[in-house]
Amino acid sequence: MIQATQMLSAKTLADPRSRDVRADLASMAGGERQLQLCAVEAMDQIRHWRRDFAPDRVVPYATARERISGPHVQADGAAFRSKGNWYGLKFKCDFAAGGEAVTGFAFLVGDPVPRARWDELGLAAVH
Image (cartoon, rainbow, N blue to C red; front, side, top):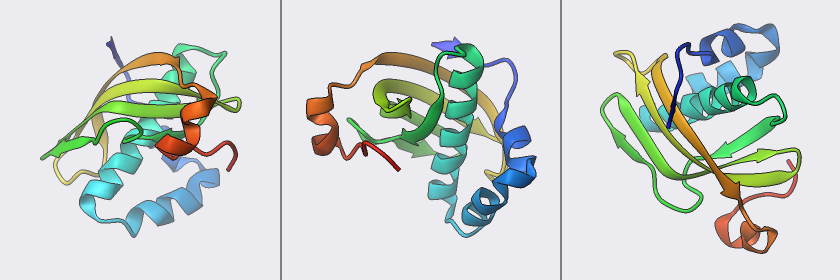
């Protein structure tokens, strides 16, 4: 797995263009908020790691249920969408007390998800 050395989601969420996302996060319960914060961190980390990816969506539970344990989230069956294609993804995401900020993140990008499986896995072709 690639271990992130700098967390990026806080900067993304501080951007005025993320106002709606911040409002949505504020209305979510703890576990769902953690998953969504991890999704933001995942997109930022993937984009930072490889500029040819442009992730616009993450599904933490595409092929396997995520595990949330206290301040830790592990998603071994996640997927992300980039430029209209879906790719497998695994990530581990850690939080500060209260679950408001990502403090650790590691990820591994997998193979492209075959288009024939998108509907079965609930992966949308477009927004």
